[in-house]
Length: 558
Image 1: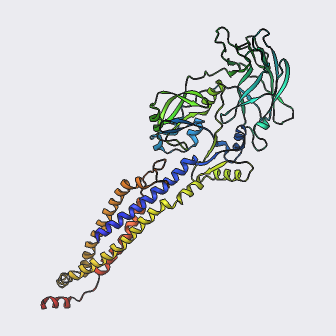
Image 2: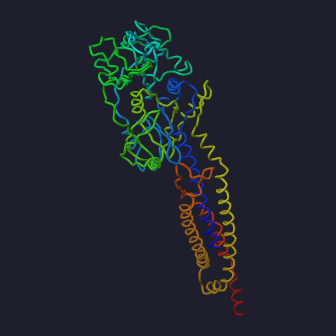
Image 3: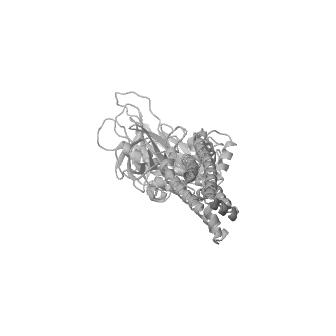
């Protein structure tokens, strides 16, 4: 009976620990897959209009923009993520064991690099106006004949989430001056989408033919919050300036660059003047990229990688990696290593969105269009992500939504994971019943065998209560010993077995790894409940009234 009691308590504790660990693991997996709240992906809206649309949802002020890409690695692929590092560290919940015991601020806080201010645009623009003057000519003496290429000007706009968008002005003349506009309504899919104001001009690129010579001047920048209404002039901040990255010469000749900024002082309403000369080409378009002066472009972008990612590329913390991202190679200095990153998993590299966007824009590249939007909850009772999901489902547009409560409910309803828990609890209950029956039978047999000794003690004047307490105490010691050993054995089994039996429906280890949880309060209550019947049987049988004279006469006759 004592061994049955030990088995019953140990099996029950194992069932409780397995259930608590499995339940916590399912919730951790749901939080990991949804960034702890709502994850929006696969949007069919224009990339530039997604920020304004999702930023207007409940809780949009704590929305985190995430740009994802894939990188081929040895034995598979890895995830590249560009996020606002400061917002990620502050808002996205990450288990401390995944960060090797550090906080999010300690790991991700140093990723962001200072960026130049640029030219802020007031309001929430739907139209950007400017006067653009073009003066150019094609070389007359050349063995190549080609159609003259019209110049083109695009502004680089950074929204409040750190995303950089290229927006083109209308068609420009070969020579002359034109009042041109950028219609943002079509670029953001208005009225469903909208810009994520405030916008900031953080660069421009000027395209021209590689056989052309001339200059392009942009002045009188203005914005309007309506498509056709009056515009408001945008003043150029004092001290604002530009640096230029000219295209390379096609013939490999040295000398002056193909394009340069005008050296003379510009007018107060002028943004820039770009002068260019033939690059030795055959009539193809080339681009010069302008960036605001201020903070210098760092030699490498800081990043945090997972241990598996570093193992795949054969690197360690402090190394500088050449990472393919959006069609170019981005130098990334690894400043930290973690076990796993939310959504991305155990083979991932995280970069600061603003730093990457700036480096790509200098190389005339765009961020990948695979943009996600994360809305983490502030705590267990926060209903804002659920309200945002409900608002999106009731509005026009299409996107994929992953809500923590729904994902968690689906994982907790998995029958594959629930079956072992039911089996363990059934075994514990059956064993507890057998232990109770065994203890009752053992106590009854013991009481019958000891009835002569009890009769002699009572005849000699021993108090009946003392004899009863002695019998009950002896059995209580056995019950208590069995319960304590069962608790210890059950806790040991939970530590040794549960981490290996908590699996996903595909029979794989969960990400993040399951953390063993054992509710000691419930385990103690369970052990006490199992011990109640044996204790009651010992107490009740021990109190049974005995005919002392009859028992003594029976002894004499023997």
